[in-house]
Image (cartoon, rainbow, N blue to C red; front, side, top):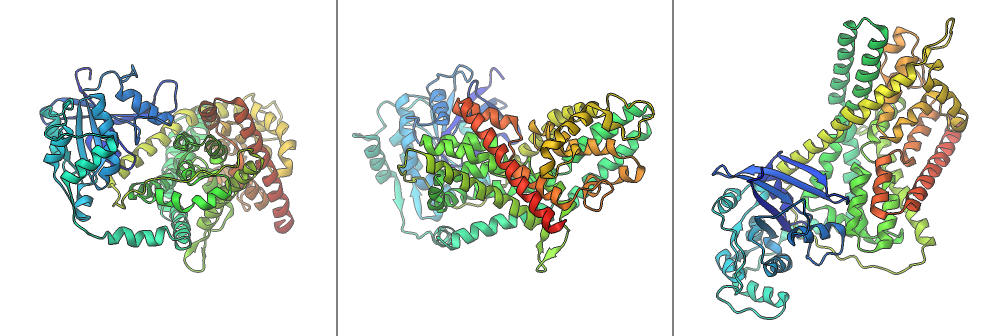
Length: 620
């Protein structure tokens, strides 16, 4: 696409820029990192009605080119042409929220002063009209000296006009003289003059937003609403996903049987059926739960609710040494700690940012979900409580809450030992409530599914084969009486580690699975599947699913205390080398990485020990 039209989207956070990007590119987009930094670059392609190819870059949101964070620096450097890998941009599409022109036009004025080819995209025009705003776009174009296009990105309205404007190359370098009006003073004063001339406000009370804010921003009702929403999410993760998970489990069981019948060599049969199919299938089965979790997160993000939750929790989080701005990075960490840690770049205070980074891994990421789902289905009965609540969903909710409470507790301890006791006010824009852009939600779900399946096809697939090899060789000596795996390299290592983890109730099979889990937490499910498939000594045991096999009533079952102890272990243990590498890149400090690793493993061991000892005492 060397001859493609190159454009970049620029705008404030919450202006609808990403929705516009998704409607233009659909699924023809990819995400990567800029060289040497953790800031993401999102690039897509689309074709204009004339057949002209377009390469579009979605730049990180920023309020100003006077950058105060790494992601804002990327936007500034691309606009100024300082990043060689992005090259020359033919045009910049400045996306602004029509309901908040006073704030958003500040960035547009900075773009005009740089003299870059600009096309102003006036987004959310439907919301502006609903609020009684009348915007004369022709006058606005004259005053700014640049072309203006109206859009409603979430409804795909105005996209054809935008593409027509790109086809006609109406974007242009701003006029030196701002058209037919003489503007003087600061940019703020210029914006005031422009708005006075081009916008007519008809007094129209926004009853919808006022009503919702009275609930979601209320100090009591707001917290109750947030708790209820989170509770519903975790109930849905189990209840909605069950039939899909059963179907996937049945498919992989059938696939293993069919493929196994055609492989006569016992070692090769074991590799394919027990190593590859059982390993991959044991993780893919949890894809429906992960998609459901991401669906809710994306809907909350698209609706404009998340900044309000950050505002609501600011006082509570401040008492724990965090700020309301930490809420969104921590919520992102429920999906994955890596983007959550990267999102802390929006926190300007170094002290608050470091504390948020240190506690982000305590949020229950989606990689833990397969482990939780396996152990909950094995040890927690599938029954309803009070006639409506799913007990397994309640336990999952409890695990998520345990991570949140632990994060607040750790942040409080860090605050006590910090020398800087200064306070920092939370200033943030609350975007308009809006109906979620279903296309953006769908694209987001596809991206997450691809990332998850790529992990299964890449690192988990490779580790499953490696683990099978370690569990299979060397072969047992003649006259061996124990299962073959006991004589393998993995079996020997597991038996060596068991005395260390015995106080936690972990057997040697669990010890084996904890090692590859350092690469990715969800690998522990595939690892346990491989280990127990090779540990089984009879056909009945081999035919059981992993959850049935390890349950208290299973043929190779664990005690309830062991199951609960392992659940608690995964609340805290830093089983993710990629997360630790991200912390190193974001902080530039190995001391921070070392401190995080030690305190998380220490907490994991202590809390699992207490759980096992207490559960053993009460449940036997």
